[in-house]
Image (cartoon, rainbow over all chains, first blue to last red):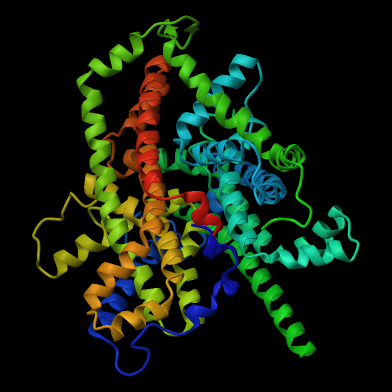
Length: 298
Length: 294
């Protein structure tokens, strides 16, 4: 699934630059049907989310459904000050820290694994299927297993040990799959050229591969951060006594019936959007810089 | 691609293992070991208070397999899985088809594609609860239907029902179909289609003989994602059905809640076996590794 996400602007294969026949003239009727389907899909995708963003800005009379009752930031203040809604601030803090740690580990480990999988080696299929297994295994079951394992070993489960590991078992397969897609577009001639010019293996990785693959690495980081930040099933049995944000949201869905829940949804989505925007912006910027440099040399 | 000097196999093996070593060092303690722990726990006896007695008994399996509830849970899970699969496949296939074959501007197609993927990077739980203001008894859909005089009483089946569960799944998982199908469709050489048109193929023929067969690998990948996520899910079922429905994993969650570890573990092992069988069956039709690295 990752090939396209990996390096968006770079995905255009030469053969696809020409639109499908009939490439000129009137559109067939299917175009309008499918365009309508697409618009309906996007509306259904974003519509509900925007409903709760809007509803989170109600005033104190606000309820869980439309119509909107007044406008204020009441529920946001409520969210961070009321004891009843739980330790939102603390869990928010932990989730961000955890996501940053997961991101760093995911980028480094996925990059190395991507390098390793370029050539066949004995047992590579085994490692590959272990990774796929880790991806498709039910998260709650894995989480319980990890929790029991820590218990059996006499270790305390906490968000920075057991939950960190449980989340990595989810983000790493994604990261490596994205890395596969990124690496498959890497032109080996550049690496060979670096060797011919006397570069060591380390220099060819650091000075050639990493700069060339930078957009793909940003994509891996985006996956690492957001998948960790929103991870729920695997953290449930492994986070120990202190909650991460999705666990906090989960307990709120069970016992809070005020727009505070929506306010939390708005806050956490803003964080996601900032991260997505920053990542995509970085990728576009790198590509643009390359494009202008290439033009300057013509 | 062969390097200039043919490497000694054992050295290349060593280098390969060194590169994937960190990955293995994470997966062994946090994937292999937990699975083995669950497997072991399924054979243990319990004192009913969360204490496990090491030993070997098949009592938990007998209990799980003999209970009428198990069959009901699997049927419910399969129902959700099949319904979600059908809807995500239809929507995913045609959205991808639209983006690849109908949007003429390449940049626009990528932009629209990104528009579809952005929610994937946001919280699933939030996207799930965001259906409440729409589907609720006093939600927008009921309000609209009442205002239009289509119904007299607000519909109660919209929220906290099986319908709501399937809506939430389709909402969350269609992206897992769109991305791989888009990916394999984008690789179809457009000259092939031009040639088919020149040879007199109808648009339906092109769809049937070229587009569908060549997107098969994307469909297979998407199916693996959708099936494994739905079968492993519990919180959508729990929240969106309002407690009215259960799936295999949500029953597992309840078991864990009351410290019935061996029964929960036995049921988890059975589910994992079913899942592995399904995924293996799908993998027989497509070489996923070659597909991704191509």
